[in-house]
Image 1 (cartoon, one colour):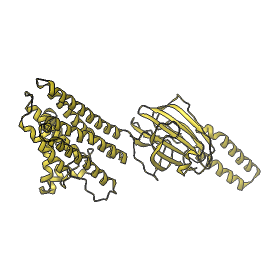
Image 2: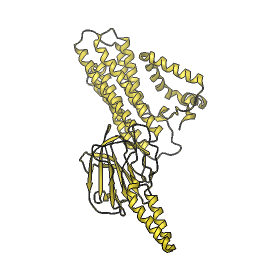
Image 3: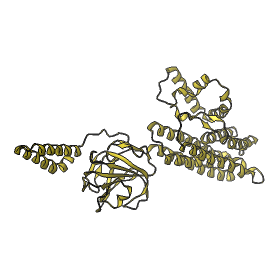
Image 4: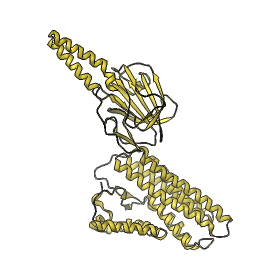
Length: 462
């Protein structure tokens, strides 16, 4: 397709070169040869290896990134998107590609001026064409913007046609800009000033999907707690325990999703400010509201003088402030000697401890309609964890372990055996595991560095 666009220019330049050579005009011949070489360079269309990852979006163009921000949909009224602006100089490949597998739902062409495309404000003034691509994960926009030299926007696809990720959709002739608009849930791992190539990965949906899974688990946990409280008030047997147990499993499921989203973001190198904020909002639901509501319904509601809801709220507000402090610290420049440890007990581990201890108590009192006096342990635990989340006690962050590092076979077999044992005895073993992590923060400073390396696998930390 690029060759078809180039044909008139190449024929003209080749004819000019031939005429100059025929007439013996050597200097004009040299200039004509440079012109022909420049046209071949401009209309080149190198093959690209398109990533097979179905959750990866690829760059729609070659060039230099001039903006990564949030912007309103300029044509179709679809609201806010995350925008990546790419400036294409005359030396860049000017073929535009589809960022994902999609169907071309609409296109919108607007005539305009031909100002320098490096200025962000010209996107509404210059000639442009916007593609609305309907992908399985939501709308994606590709906006072709003419530049100072560009005088023609070329489209090779029409509405209702399907496109594959990395497939050609058009080009802009002689210097331009291409903007990509992706859903705000997309984790974009490029920065302003970076150079990108069309067909190369520039955005991921997977970490944000993991965070959405975390949020979904927290939401389902809250629903199960409400259902359990209704059954507890009306049932004459132990049926009310089942929804509470299910809610605890949802909280533990959120814990797994929370570990996965950060880990996947680090593996791909595409952490983002949006991802951190989205993760924190999900954590407030899954590890703040859900455990606080659970302990309140099982234990704290029986305490006098509204002490119960005050304890639950203290835990919730301390957890939210713990997340806010964490985000503030991670947003600061990362010095080379910054510790990978958590300062204070992390809220996902706090929720895991509350959930696992509650699960253990429900198992112990399974045949009774009410939980015995041991349930007041949960009230004290909630207050203690509220303090620990804001303490200066340091805990290792296992999200930074390099799981790709080779390990001896016996050690790997031991890890698999321990994991299988935990799964088989989760009603008891999870409480031991989370309690051990809580206690480890207190004894950690007194352990030799060699043993800490063995326990935390710090030699593989990035």
